[in-house]
Image (cartoon, rainbow, N blue to C red; front, side, top):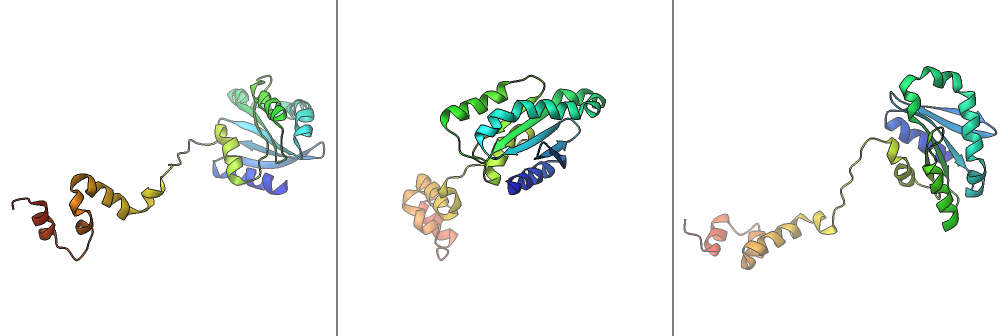
Length: 181
């Protein structure tokens, strides 16, 4: 669980947030803030504990930090709570955890079950992170020669091998194409 908190903190810092660790009710909470958003993230041991305790933890932390929140101005409209667990979840539990996100009382919420890798964390935290684009390339895109061969085959099917052969001169390719020089 500590590793998950460290990764969580690193991802938020890489995205421009100031982060800090704070203890509360025997839990280590990751606090985070930037110019527009502030929030708290908690990693629970299992889904049952998350479902049982999230509401109480949210209220207690908000009460504890009320003076700072009152000074935050418009940022208080962008207070997030992130509730995570690396533990497995049944379909009904996953549904209940997703319902937490739909609860807009007090703060905005982000939840995640079965979060165990950095990629899982990034996926869960996307609403808080800068826009990211990760192109999905087909395996054929990795082989430039194959791509060129396909393009050449579409233009001049009988030249695909010759055009990519470094021993065949450009003038020979032109001759094979039947183009008048």
